[in-house]
Image (cartoon, rainbow, N blue to C red; front, side, top):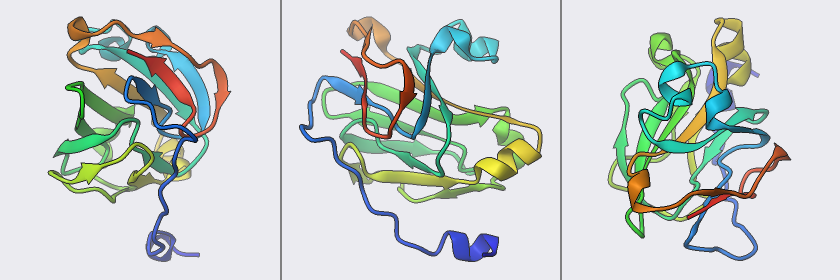
Length: 167
């Protein structure tokens, strides 16, 4: 299968059994990591906000909350969300992956789009990211954490749409 055909398929949404409005969901299958364990000091220091990370095993990034896609990056490696209850969230796929200039990323969601937790946001090529020498860790950052108290709910191996944090 070539790169172009890999992304031609429509990606179905996932849904948690009970959609909770005070939960951040896991955006991709993988291993849950506390934010302070990522290798990028800007994220690990929580200077951009609090949250969590996922060492991904899949190819799809799903919405961790319901709300709106507030912004997208031209390189496809990151996006911002505004949840229905006011959380401002940055999702960043990989460390320094902006340097890939979009290679290995295909946005699915568009800026301004209304989303429900579990909607697909972007596809990423995990093998290509690693082959290029980049760490594929996904960071989910609440950029206005002073407005809420975040409590971790996950650890270890996780599936997309498992509960990650309560707020």
